[in-house]
Image (cartoon, rainbow, N blue to C red; front, side, top):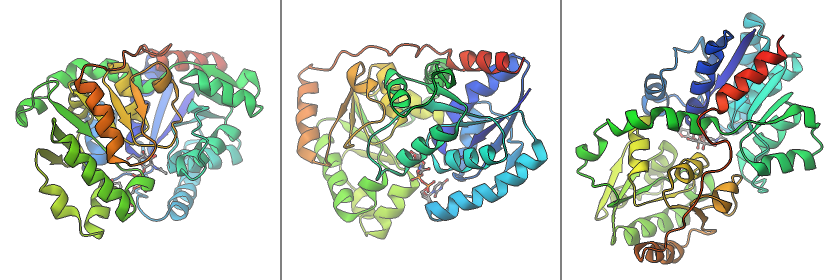
Length: 364
Ligand code: UD1
């Protein structure tokens, strides 16, 4: 059985790595296509190296452009790949543009489609990822779910039960697998950081960073947080480009007690996460990783498609980019009032094995 897995953007790599390993362990043929949605060394290549992924069988080189251009270009090229590879199954992960583009091509060419991380919904259709999630789930044949809310959404949307599998979280598989290795990276020593003495921050969501007010609010959040703890901010290219575009980059860089870095490798970022006093973010995946690690996480989003991280985990949503809200939440943390948190069901490092087992059985 040949499974063709698609990766495109940074959050895809750590999800496909454990799946690729699990497929090979079961004797399945695993082929990887990289659309090139993310193309910089720091956003892509370093992840392949650190996660021990093979050089992709196909690299499409289709980064940049508007959503429409990106999606359309990926579709055109992916059609050729499918004609050439003729796999038994196409597997897509997450919710990026590459996910929906390749799922749509595959289903129209009558290939079975598996979607890993199915059923997540933020309820906010202004988020490009929400559209990608809804459409990908609608056309997939196998829906692998990470948390209970996913089961509820898929049932509500009328997806037949036999297509849905609650298998856990493959991103946590990578975290469990690489945690020890991450501890050996030396990133803390390199920047003279003490465990528990810094706050790790990332921001890249268009709704936060594509406009002047958002960027100014982020600066104020950094400024206030840095009064208490050093702020470490590995910066996504989108955020950096926007800061430059609005003429704020130099002022941003010069803020006190801030360590601004390029996007970091998987292992370095994991090491920073597991030793942070707290994390401030607007990312999807980091909400889950901090929940597993039991590190307090403040997420600047109106809604989350990963509600288990709030219900069970250490995540807290801060609905608008209001510097006061994080200052308040931070004050509570400093007084030792951190949310306890527990690890969600099946986030145990074995989700990819479960998925491989299901797909291998299906092929018999
Ligand atoms: C994408 C995903 C988002 C995910 C994020 C993680 C979609 C709709 N969004 O958003 O869900 O959380 O990736 O990073 O798929 N750029 C570079 N180098 C790169 C990649 C991007 O410079 O290697 C710059 C380009 O200017 C590009 C911009 O960043 O136009 C945005 O990249 P894009 O892939 O369109 O979306 P992200 O904001 O990264």
